[in-house]
Amino acid sequence: MPEISKLTELRKLLLGMERSLGLQELSHTERDIYYAASDIAKTEKQIRTTGLMEHALVAEVSRPTFFRALKSLVEKGYLAPSQGRSRGLYEINRKPNG
Image 1 (cartoon, helix red, strand yellow):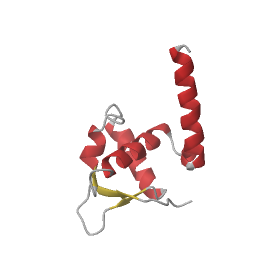
Image 2 (cartoon, rainbow, N blue to C red):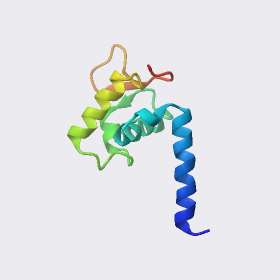
Image 3 (spheres, one colour):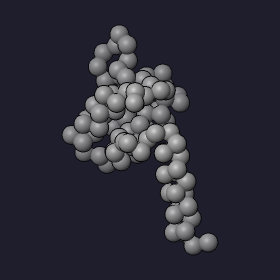
């Protein structure tokens, strides 16, 4: 199977999984930030903004775009500011708002 065909199948699988999780409503940047946050949350209790910005999935996103998407993820309920902590710390919401 040619490489592009393999990538096409992977992309279709990813699209289906995103739809089943309700992530299709998110922009590309929002999804990448959410994926990066989920990745960081595997090893860290709280997700630092700086850690997100340095993650490979979002390292190339401009600063203004990053912060707009981060704000949107909080407004949509995918991420929440960490309780009782300083700014720049977030937690994953397992059941985002609709």
